[in-house]
View 1 (cartoon, one colour):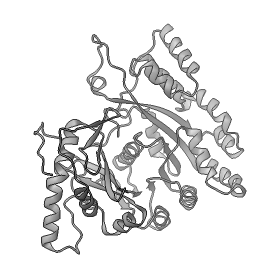
View 2 (view 1 turned 90 degrees about the vertical axis):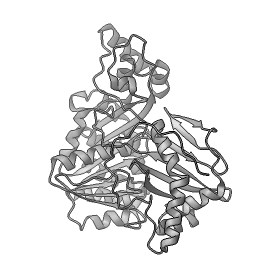
View 3 (view 1 turned 180 degrees about the vertical axis):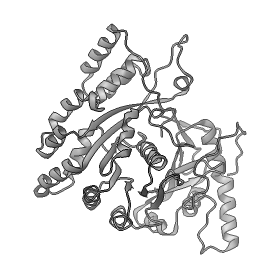
View 4 (view 1 turned 135 degrees about the horizontal axis):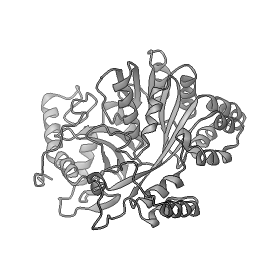
Length: 426
């Protein structure tokens, strides 16, 4: 396919250029030198120019489908670049084989999909999923930030940094796919690494952000390469003297059970859950268990859960021509709207007794301890002119609350931007 998109400005050096788990230019040892060289040359010719083009476009995702030109996701919308050469089905089949590790190839062959992470020639990190469709493979790649973002840059309350000082417990980051959960977890781990002398063990599929030790010892383990499963790695981590454990995602009953046990036994556990809001994240974990176990799990979770942060990314509103916004706001493509649940004794009691419907009211009135509802944050963003009314209404579960809060803010002359917003959709 060979292509060479025009060069653009130099990119900043990323924090993950020397990752040993990187599949780019790393060929399994069982290959002979000639085969390894041919594979590396093929990746350089076919894939790397597209990765670099994705970086220059500042696209969040690159999609490669058989016998099609590449698609790039920008500002949340998918864009076909038919001016670029078509990627042939045979090329994608070979790319999938090269990029996936030996152990993951078995997964790819039996389950039809496998995850991994690679780097472009400039060091920009991508995670990918290769999957079979109609007898050939497609590859979806997500571009990762070239540095660790602060919570403020991500549009999240900086008061959440207090969670990094906890000695134990469970902290959940919730949201749909593509909402930036991994980026938020990376910000938390970076904070612990820079502030505390801790042993941090991460269990990821795949490793997305590579953390170099600052004050902490960090061991990052990848599913399929370093360990067979989240639960196996989590059980093993309890014998590795960790202070902080990051579990990329908990969705299976044994992994949830072990994560709760880890939090109960003096470890601080960070993880993600696919859920749209804080209460949904709590209920999702409990619902995985058989009905006869759920009451006991509620009590356990109520004791170990420290906080839930639910986040969504929304398209920003076009700024007025005469706006005096800061440079970061003019640059931004999507803004983070978030919901924060801090588990106070009252909230813990609600979780334990199954009164989840009352948790929303606790969040509404809990701003003094750092809580907020999604409607409250949507109102803030709309009043500040960072999102449109239609975007706020589409995301809100109770649009009337958002309208009332914006009207109140405008009567008071509000709408002041108190947090920055994200400059990407990762």
